[in-house]
Length: 437
Image (cartoon, rainbow, N blue to C red; front, side):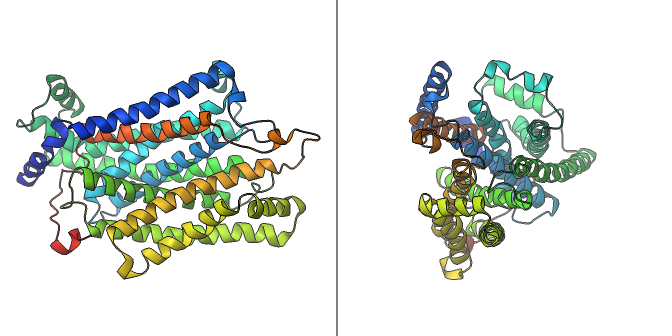
């Protein structure tokens, strides 16, 4: 272990060894939100989907929106972490682990929302036993399973050196079971030149595979929509559109994670203004691409003047006016202004912009799912108004909040198990001007 790594481990030791009162209060709050979600889930299982807003017309609601959003954030984390690793970007070290955690944690939460849409969970195993390869749903199951497996391997390879460092750092005051766990997980890694070469080569291979899998998997998710004849979904650009939107939302989540851990763990020396600006510039470029794809999609629908597409656009501008404006105007223009103009590039401004982008991208998924289902290709005759118009219930919002809380909880626990900033090979020292807000 190098001296610089020992110095960093000493700095991170308090975060790994103990949790303060504020930390326990934060965990208790998250557990309370998750508990409310568990109660809502029990209500849904015992009483059925009638406790949700989903009906015959709108068979999908915010559960599917959450699924698309979390999966998008996951693939974005894979693309960002994999790309930064392969290109050996100089400033990547302090933030790449957050991107890796975002990938795996989102992958664990996202598929759960699909299960909430299924009325008969007791028949879930039929999807494996009797799945049809012609079905896009089966493609998605195979793709997501492959992605989870690949991303876990990539994360494990990325943290292996730090696990070995924590195993060898005797000054850490940890329970015996944790020290034993670090010893088992380190797989006898001692940092020899041969081991470093093999580990680097394996990590490069997995980074390449993760990038490819992320693009393929999210494209498959987009094709589930675009291969239908449903107005608003039958589009040839949904594949790249979903991928761009995913990376866009993921970059915003990464910025928010950087701000949170920088404040909580006092990482101003490692996560500097330079990192916020760098990721902010990535967000700016993605905002431009996202805006272009959004404009192209709606322009062709509007100009084509097909009856059902025209009805959908009218619905968007009447009943979903403000979500449409936030998603497709504010969510695109704000990053271009805040990050594009140098004097606005402060850490608070970039973080606030990231929050707006996260909300805008969630609303974007909502506008893809709900308005389209409210304007079906073949309307159900004489259906009740409350069955035609979707309105989410407290059960759905509670489970949505529980998913977000679980994401934060797993992220918090992960930061207690392994330093949130990569220690191995990280010798960066912040310049005074970089730390400035």
